[in-house]
Image 1 (spheres, rainbow, N blue to C red):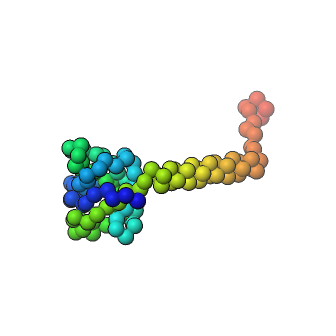
Image 2: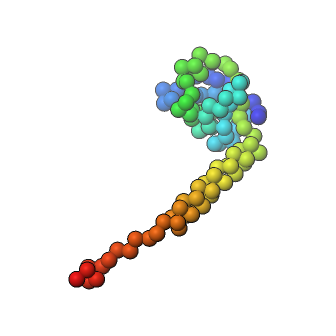
Image 3: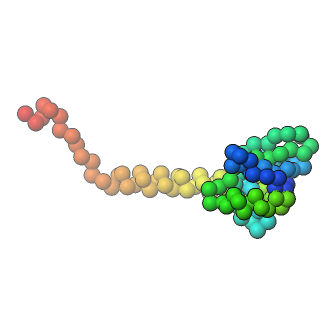
Length: 119
């Protein structure tokens, strides 16, 4: 993990704003000092040398707690960690699809009778 920057404030929109000295990749996971995943990089704005980062927080994160941690360092996942996470998600999705296909095959299909065959 790399240092992202410091917590600046909590915006009215519910996004956490951090001030950084580097531009992180969009969509990267954001962590606190205690390695708790708190959200994803949503937007990068401001000057190129010292950008501000808007972080879309997860619902499970206590926003009031983060607001009181102003100035604390945040960390961002590296490109390699992001690729591992996306591979895990793809594997989960493909295994879920296979399971649903197998379930559908095991059920006997019900044939609908047409109106003509009823008469």
